Image (tube, helix red, strand yellow):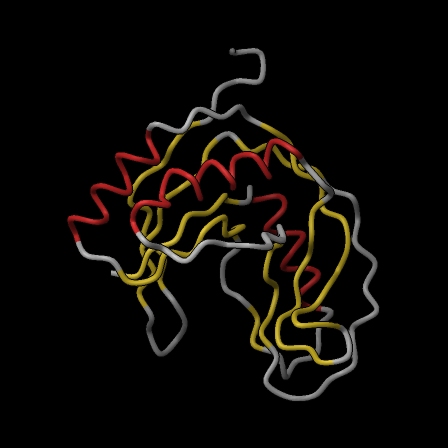
Length: 173
């Protein structure tokens, strides 16, 4: 099974992202759902999934808020393959991502060396100019992260929530 760990995006932010997508070139392949991937695991068996779940449940992190910041592209604005919206720097998010990496280190998954928090809007197949779209600084609360299974289908991937791990309220220590 194909696994990844992500943060979900609330409905109001999803609606805003859909509005942004509508301003993109019709030739791009728009994503059907929105999440922020914290760690892509790839293919794993049932036993590995269970052990990963146990390791993730041991992570203790506090809730935090993310704020949308800028429109960007991978690998860059001159050669676009993915269009995304980034978030303002958040040390709690960065620590959570690092804690996930550390918790799963012993499983042999490839380590993410340069985590760049973003929400994917579209994948680009042809040459295009970077879109000129202003991003509102919308905020949303993150109170959990999720282990997902991704099933690749002709119409696009299907995501199945396998386990939600709640984060501690900010005042909890």
